[in-house]
Image 1 (cartoon, rainbow, N blue to C red):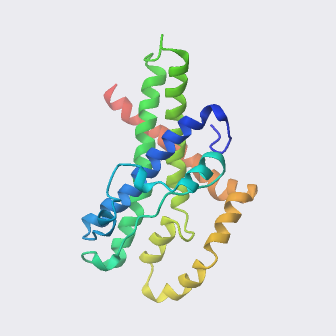
Image 2 (cartoon, rainbow, N blue to C red):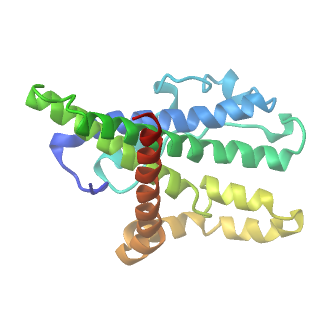
Length: 222
């Protein structure tokens, strides 16, 4: 399935998949920050599985109809974190991509069960199409968010993980790098050769890995 191929018939199912993926991603950031002692996200209504507080309307429209988009960033205050503040930022940053990885594996397990167990035999054709396509988008979108957000480019989660695992003496170099982050992202998104190498290849590898994990998990129980 091509994540960026637009088709009117699939818009509702892409919407469902994106809302779930973005909501859990942002909730995970808020939850870990709260567990570390920062109530900033919770006080602003972001420690919730209700998608509305997390959705940026313009960002959602772009990711449904174009090659990129975003949700509302979760506000955090590292000064409130217990213990090592820099590690706290790393924990909060990695939580979003990890929840997307977990979701992709879970949706892949459900897809395999639904697709190959005969559960949809005799089901209305439109209903079967809706279920299958929603699950497919849920797998690939969560896998894509896992890979994309771990790229070490500002302001993505991967950049924050790299920066705050690095020595404090490197901070000045990272400040200079942050200026170019948005331009690097635009190159990644709009130049086909760049995106297919930096994003497409890792996504293909991770997608294969996710399928294998799902199959291995199912083999234990079936």
